[in-house]
Image 1: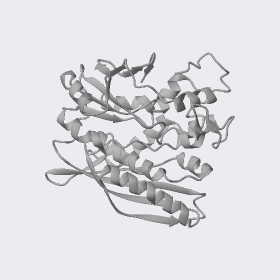
Image 2: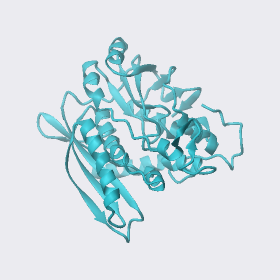
Image 3: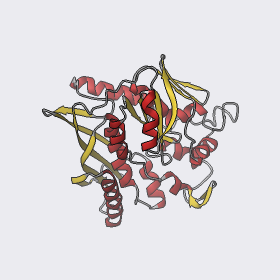
Image 4: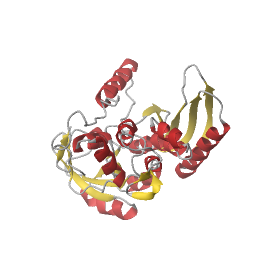
Length: 331
């Protein structure tokens, strides 16, 4: 990545918090909400309900301000995939097979073209993840919504011995799986950065056949194909690299995650960093930087997992409490 620490001025430099999204404050608020309910069947990525010999798991999420990019270039064909993927990938990180989905679309006025395109994306996501759409809700609320918002809830099932322990071990190997670009996190920072000097319809400098908006809208990759290999090869824990960027690996346990061979970051990240004068640390705390999913497993099982998937060994686990990547120490 481009080292911006000595370039530009502090006044020019963007951070996620300064654009309106404070990850630490958001996590504190979520923790307070869960504490109020006192649930002890909540993993890092999904809530679990004991139904006898299995767990019923639930996860809920939306597309976020990526919707504003879709509105700007009037392309809503992929955001349904994002809505599915952001939920499904959380279940996969818990070791749960997604089975059903419901969506919620809030809109300021009815728009058949918009809802049709969103539906097409949802259908693609459902097919790729092997789920059934049980229903949904479209709420027309002009006094509340300016534009639209899309979110959903995903239900999954897992045998009790299939739930990932969620705890890595010292000596574990880390295997990473490529992202498809920005996915659906960090868009508030990304939008602020790229629109400083450009329009979404401008050609993307690294690929003149695509616009900047089209590059930002690349849909979130679905990782459901990893469930079976993860179980077969004894994965201890997994991380869906979303809000909070690489600090998500700390959700696998308090260890030091040494990333000595990271997957390459796609050109869109370099573009965001340069346009927003964003530091390397802020980029890695906000974005997936080329890796959308990571798992920890015993060293003697790692190569077999890599052989069965498109994953790559990216590092290992040591004693400590940080993520060490590209000369950065994140905690």
